[in-house]
Structure formats: C-alpha cells, structure tokens
Length: 76
Image 1: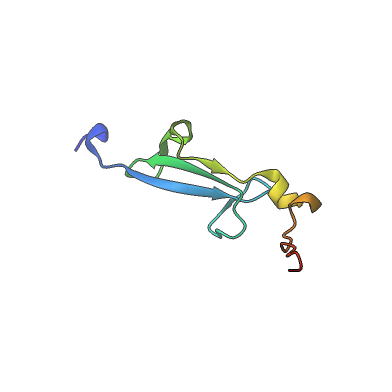
Image 2 (image 1 turned 90 degrees about the vertical axis):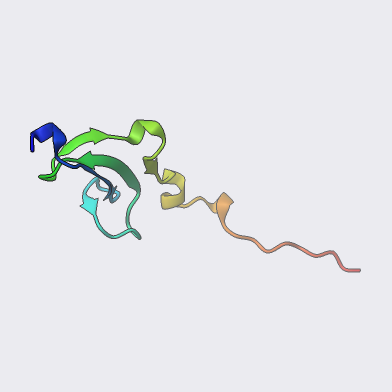
C-alpha cells in the first residue's frame, strides 16, 4: 500500500490557556481539527472550515457585567 493510499483519520486536539495540548476538556480553551496519516503525523489542519474553536477570553478572565443576576419581580 503506497503512502497516499494509507488511511487517514480526523481528530480534535485540545489546548489549554498556556497553549499546551491537553486531554482534559474542562481546561481546554481552544480546539483544532486535524487530519492524521497512518503514522500519526498531521497532514492537514481543518480550522479554516469552521470546525476549530476558541473560548472567548472574557469568559475566562471574568467580567462583572456578565455575572448572573436574578430577575426583579415587581410587587403586585
């Protein structure tokens, strides 16, 4: 089987806030969809087609304006 005929697979790589790859979804702030060859080398990146994602930095740092509030009910 030639190199071009070997099967490839699609995976999502997750990255933490420091840019390190992680398997822990709870600390991931960015994801990248890649295509790997049979050996595991990245042969294509698919972030350009809308499959990649990134967490909005303001949601990591926090913003007092986005804190949850309870609705105020008017007295009847």
